[in-house]
Structures are given as C-alpha cells and as structure tokens.
Length: 389
Image (cartoon, rainbow, N blue to C red; front, side, top):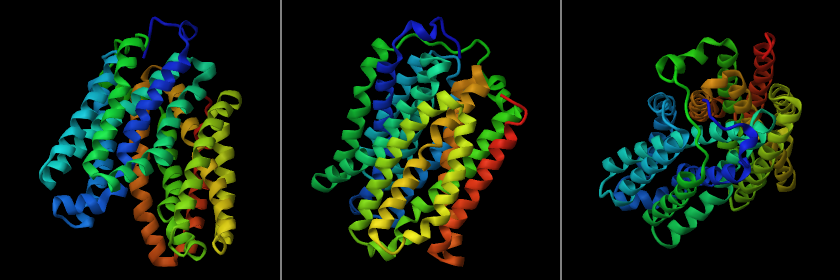
C-alpha cells in the first residue's frame, strides 16, 4: 500500500478512533449471536443447535473470504474499501433481520461476515499506515480496542436488547452502529491508495516469505492455545463458579483485562519490537496456564487467574499484526486479511482440540494443553526471526 501522505501529514488518532468504532460494530455482530440463540431458534422454528450454525457459518465465511476480498479490492483506495465493507455488512444484516426462514438467514450471515472480514483487516492496515512506523503498534491497538470492546460491552448490550425486544432488533442496532462510521470515513479519512502491483501476484508474494508464513503459523498455534481455556472456561472453573452467575464475572474479567492488555501491548511493541513482545508474552502466558488449575477451587483465585490470562492473551494480537505489516510492507492489507483468517481458523481448532482434551483427560488438563501451545508459539516466533526482519 502506498499513499501520497507522509505519516506526519495527518493526525492519525481521530481516524484510528473512527475505525475502532467500526470494528466495535462488526465485532459485536460476530459475538452477539451466541447470546441470542434461544430466541433465534424459536423465531425461525429450528433447534438451538441449528441456530448455533449461524455462528459457524459466520466464522467460516470470515476466514475464507478475508483473503479473497483483499485480492479483489487490492487496487481500490482504502477509503472506498472501508465504506464498501460497511455497506456489505449492512446489507447482510438487513437481510438477516428481515429473513422469514432459516436458510436465508444462513446466507445472510455469510454476507455480513464478508463485510466484517474486509473491514477489520483493512482498518488495521490503514491505521498502521497513517500512523507511520514509529507508532504502528499504537494505531493497530486502537483499532483492536474496538474489537475487544465488542466482546466486553457490545455483545452483552446486544443480548440485553434481544431479551427486552427481539433478536432482530439487536441486528438492526448493530447495523445502525456500523453505518455511523460511514460518514466520517467517507468524508474525513485521508486518501490512501493501494499499490499499482495489487492483484493475485501481489497477494501471493508474502506467502513466498518464510518469515510471513512463520508469523501466520504462530498465529494459528497461539490463538488455538489462547482460545482453548476461554472456550471451556465454564468447565475449567466449574468448581469455583458452580456453573452459575459467577461465570459471568469471569467472562467480564477476561474481557476487561484483555482490553487493557491489547492497548499496553501496542505501546510496548513500538518500543521494544513486536517479536520480542510476542516471545515474552507467550512464555509468561505458558506459566500462567500451567498455574491455572490451582485457581479452580475458589472464585477469588479464579478471578485473579482470569484477569492475568485475559491481559496476556490479548497482548498477542497487536504485536502479531505489527510484525506481519512490518514484514510485508507493501502488502499490508493482504497480510492482515490472512491474519484474520488465521485467527478464525484457530478459534475453530480450539473448540475441536479442546473437546478432545476434555473427553480424554478432563477439564483440568486443558490449561496444560494451552501452555504447551504457548511454548511452541514462543519457539516458532524465535526461529522465524533468526534471519532478521
């Protein structure tokens, strides 16, 4: 990606804040359906399990379409891509809210995922470019703040709206939030153009760099490990929570701590380098996961453990993107889309791998599996950097 603007030509923080708001909207859309499944199932006359496939379709479509759409829009200005992404997102959600049957809702969730995937990847890359190399990590962290906030605030808020009104009202609310970001992006975002070499060849070029492949591989490994304890947090801490309302306290603690960790990691990556931050965080997180079973018995210990794990878990995402953008340089928009695909693949794998561990060794063994994957992540990150940046 290139631009006629220099990093100092614009005040990048207001633009990053708008992009973060858009990320909050599309992130909320991805997370909130899980809290609306009973009402969705009742409305569409399907089982809750079938309604749960809306989440699966969204995740798969997100992972598959992110890099494909990056190729198709590579020659567009970033402003145009971002506005188009929110338009597709809005169309998909509007169809979801109006659809009379389950089949059409499934299709519409894939459409909404396409818009969400394109927006998130482009927003991260655009904010990083506007901020310049010295403040790249901070810019990415601000955009990712929108995503983490959607987990902490957006999804619970959307669930409440769905309970009080209707699940379709929640979808309309999320759509409206996304549309609020369109005017400032369309009218105020500086012109940032894609490079002239954009296209399939440019898309494939980063995949010829073993360092980029190494970061993408570590992304899958890292987030598989991170999401195993999160996905099965109810089972891991069942002795402390009793499976009741106290579980919500742990989820809130994880989300709030994760939001703080994301912002802190952005600043640290700018100062110390993203690779060093990734190695340090994943090694410390491995130790935390090893100690996690010790906090299963009491709610106080469970909260402390969850706070630390949440802070560190979300401290990985910004340095990973920072490192990818640094390595890819002119292919920033494309590698961030690949990053999004890698994360969603990891989320899917975490459910499957965690289920195997739960069936084979029980809930207490899951943090140990996560710790092993964190150690592998640190090793792969070190090895992928031996050739230098």
